Image (tube, rainbow, N blue to C red; front, side):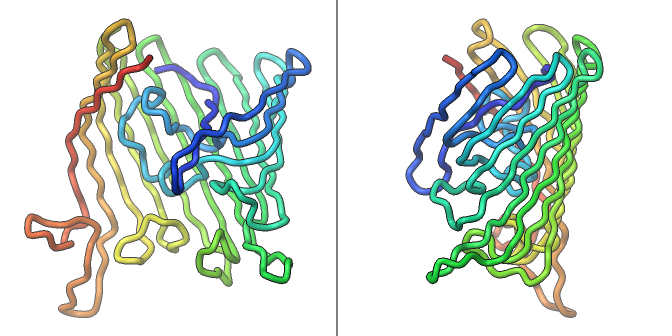
Length: 290
C-alpha cells in the first residue's frame, strides 16, 4: 500500500469493449495536456484490479462516480506539494456527446506532509439530452469528491474517501428529475503490511442512494448499504503474481410494505426467493501482471 496519484483509466464500459488511448503533450516540465478519452480523476478505487488493494470494487465506485470522460484537460504541477488540474469534457461515460453543453472537471492535489496526500475533485455541468429540434434540456450533474491518503508508517496505511453527488433534469436518457436529488458515499481503508509477501486490509463503506437517482436499487427503489471487506494480499513471483483472499459483508436497508405484504429484498435465499437484505461473500482472486 502507498499513497497514489490518480491513475489514467481508458476504456468503454457499454456495448463492445474498446480501448481509446488519449493523447498527451508536455510543453513544459510542469504542464501536461491530455486530449481524448481518459479515466476519471474522481474517486480512490480504480478499474484495473492490480492497482487496488481489495479485489471487489465498492458500491461508491460502482454506482456513485463516473468511469471516464472525453475531452481536454491540463495538469499543472506548481511545486512538489501542489498540483492543479482543470478541463472541459463532453460529460460522463459517454463517447458520443448527448448535447451541446460541456462539463467542467477539476482536481486540487495537496501534499502537506510526507506520506499525506489530499485530493479535491469535481465535475460540474449540464448532462441533459438534446431534443430533436436541437435545443438542450436544462439539467445538472455534479460530484464533489475528497480523497485523503496517509502512509502512517512503512507498514500502516490509512485512506478516507467521501463523495456527494447531485442530479437534476434528464441524465443520459433516464427519467426526468423535477427536483435535485442526491447520493453519497463514505469509505475508510486501513492496511497493514506484515512482511514483503503478505499484507491485510479492511474497507468500511456506507453508500446512500435512498433518493433512487443512481443504479444501485432494491426492487426498483432507492436504498442504502453498509459494507465491510477484509482482504489479504499475497505477493509472489517478484510482484507479478497477486493472490487476494477476501471476505465481504453487504447489508442493505430492509424494504417494507403494508402489513403482511412480502416485499422483495436485495438477495435470494436458499430457495431462490429474494427475502434477504444482507449477504456474506468469500472469494479468492489470482492476478498475474505482465
